Length: 102
Image (cartoon, rainbow, N blue to C red; front, side, top):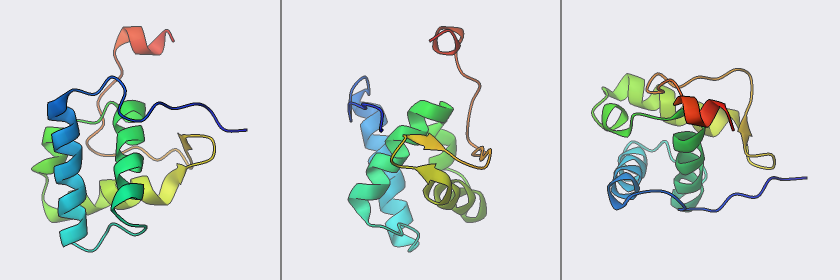
């Protein structure tokens, strides 16, 4: 049974812009394995799940950028909207207290 997830909900226009820029860079580097739409949804889930620092990811060198983007795609559980194998992106940030209490 999958969880409900409202795509785009609670994301500022700047956050959406940054996610799109990450996807565009991934496409340019041929690491958007399942296509643009799939990676957009994967990155949004990862942003919310890991509290990703999108600015840090956008400016990361190619190696660290690929580590995070490829790792997100490789370790995502799309059915349960979770991540497997204890994957942690390098550009993740600690969750805010209010998020931990949920």
